[in-house]
Length: 169
Ligand SMILES: [Cu+2]
Image 1 (spheres, rainbow, N blue to C red):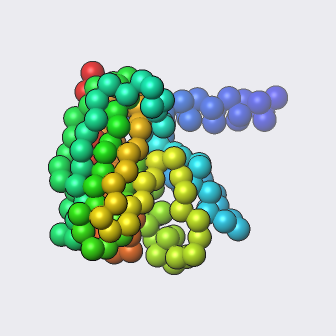
Image 2 (image 1 turned 90 degrees about the vertical axis):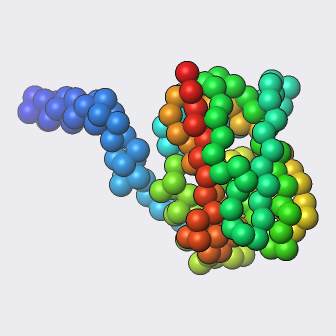
């Protein structure tokens, strides 16, 4: 009986944490580090959205990535429910990328990729571009708020190669 009360209390606390918007932090603390391979299929973060259906794209947003280690533009605005295609162009001499997600998660991935250069990088929220290449990433946004993105080439995130997508009602 005591045990079930304790469980009930825990679930109430979890609900309270969610209600106060600390769910992301809570999830980060309790999320085990992936072992034996880096599975970026596991995307976390409330409100970051998900890969979109290319047939539902209503707008294309162009972003240029270059060796000044900036995204241009670095801030974009989309509407809730909108499926957009980010059309990226790497106009630099270095490899660049765009990964969508919460900034804390992007930093974790950037650090892991710096430590394990040979691991596979494919993930639905990541587009990597060699110098001079172009490519598209289709994404749907499901909650109002802010979603971060960053370049995961070693050192680029720390140098400020980050951006944000403002999702409006
Ligand atoms: Cu870069």
